[in-house]
Image 1 (cartoon, one colour):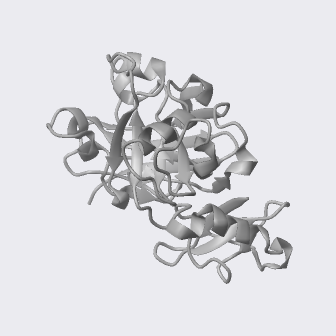
Image 2: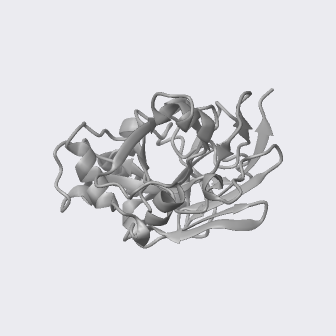
Image 3: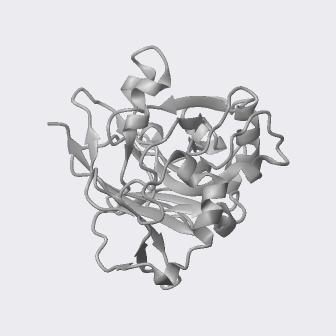
Length: 281
């Protein structure tokens, strides 16, 4: 299933894509997509609905984040070998875990707002994992059984906030609109192997990131299992699994976001995003 949210900010409705690529209004059955609404049992109930009997949405308009809110917005750092190299860092021996503020969540085509004091805004296409069952002390063998689905994420970052201002990375990851997510939550059964998906990002029409999740240092299985040994993952949690090489910080000379820049972000089978960078008012 491809689930989505459509409509103006704060007034989004829940939708589902039918076999013909039309959006159907699911809101009478599922008023919201977050937390328990994306648990595996809840998704099984959606599968029993006659999709073709739902109203067709002829003009969905704005597409919102595929989840209205998240309990936790986790991220994995330096999870592609070439990205670690371009960052001037060794490949990690264990997954690097950090968080984005949940208030960073935004629609896949919403503007990305460059913070007032930003100097080094950057882009990061990532495979997003949405948890579907409470996970604690989960084995790698069973880890994918705890995944509800996957989505496209742009882990927008501010490198000077992240690396030059002290403290933890979350400062450089959490400004409003720094978490474009969606357009779809694609259920795990439709994705198959999450370690064989192309991930790309274009900046002003030029491809700057082009890789495959097969190049991840730590697989989705390893990440979910590893994280569950330290914390309880809950339905609706998002994990952004890392970005490949091609970020602005790694370019020579470095290239950071400027007002008017357009990012086109896509993970194979999960849908595309398009954001314009704008200056904060």
